[in-house]
Image (tube, rainbow, N blue to C red; front, side, top):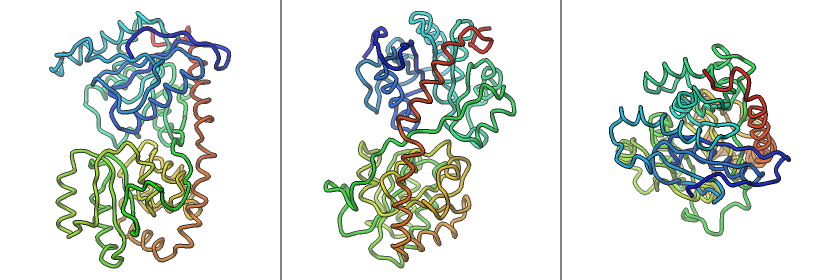
Length: 390
């Protein structure tokens, strides 16, 4: 929906105008979180608009009341990167000036830089949210330089874990660094297998979810599964997601002679159905921000095994209580943990049962309330030196 903000009443008794900003609205975790947050804020009575810097549609459903506008609608032929670099901040500044929001919230590093640059001469508080742990994550050099220059101008900098907060506090005003974890969006598991299972019955399934990229390290997952598959003939692996490593991963499957044992169906609209139909969830990332799918797998009642990578898994899993953590990148330890759960179904069931308590720690209502409180406090303090003005 394209259009002006729509006035609502309700929420916490004070309706504020909010512009949300993101680079694109594809199928990633940050995009899913922003769609969820926009819907939540709108339903609580706030006037919410979404401004998207790339693309022309959202993979995730947005309520009609969330007025959405895409840069590509106003600049449909903008294919040259340098022109986009120049014009996107100007376009976003026009949006902010026209809508006069009480607060702007941006998701993801590049969008954060564009938003702070666009708002540098606008009297409006700007909150930026990092959605990955920045130290191991590379962004274009120019944006990395601008981040160091512009982030101190933000009203608040939101991160997802305490480890990332420590990174931010080293060079930002600690009082403006706020930690808000992602909510658990998946419902609790209803039974051992969904009645509409997307996976063949009568087999055991391991599942991994994420972009098919170097960060997610699915090559190691396939290697580990190859070892297990040679011993346990009834176990299979499904990897959900799409990305640049697909051809390499498919070749790896062939090298291990795992055709028919490893499925890669791409991006799916119903990942929860795959989680419910599986027996073990595995996370092999080199680094994360806050792995949404790990929480969702736990909420679905799956025993989980994860590399203790930076950052997120160590703040989500209590090792041996509601899941298993193994040293980051340690393939042997990962294989041992998976063999342990296969050999000890009672232990797997115990971990799965306790895993569902993740909902109590990262419930939607709790997290939504923290976001609302943060944005209201930023809107109230719009006159302070961190409002985004120069």
